Amino acid sequence: MKKSTGELLSILQHKPSVEAYFDENDDEMFFGTLAEMLNFYRTNKGLSKAEVVRGSNIKREYCYELLRGDVAKKPSRDKVIMLCFGLQLSVDECQQVLKKSGYAPLYARDTRDSILIFSVAHHISVVKTNIKLAEYNLEPLE
Image 1 (cartoon, rainbow, N blue to C red):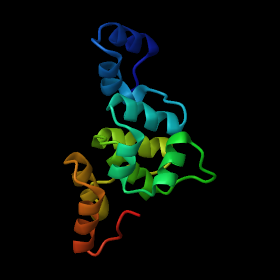
Image 2: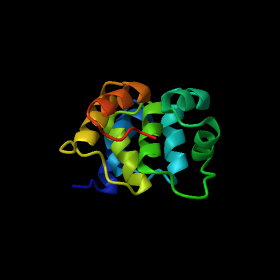
Image 3: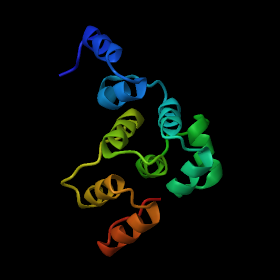
Image 4: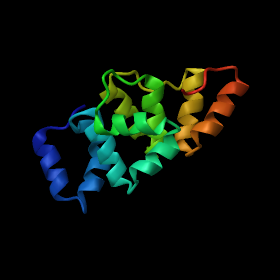
């Protein structure tokens, strides 16, 4: 059940930091555009854009376009998930980014999504995740 604005205001006033408030109430928040949400997480985690590019395994130029919001068409679900790897997001944060992108969240009953959930939760790289996906004859992240 959603919290009222008054409840959120009270919680915010009693938190030690705005980050603690966001962490606990991220499903209640509006972050604007996808690029704004991605950059919120990037700066909150102290990551450079170059670190996100390396961790996401997305081509550099395209990753920078996604972070700027300069893409002509919507990125694929896989690209969004790869960004989540690059941003070192938690599973809950990844689910929020997927929802913001208009995609279904990762689903634990789906074999491929289960591997992705495990990899995100344990901060396993995109490359090692793709190796695990291949072991199960599943499509790699690309």
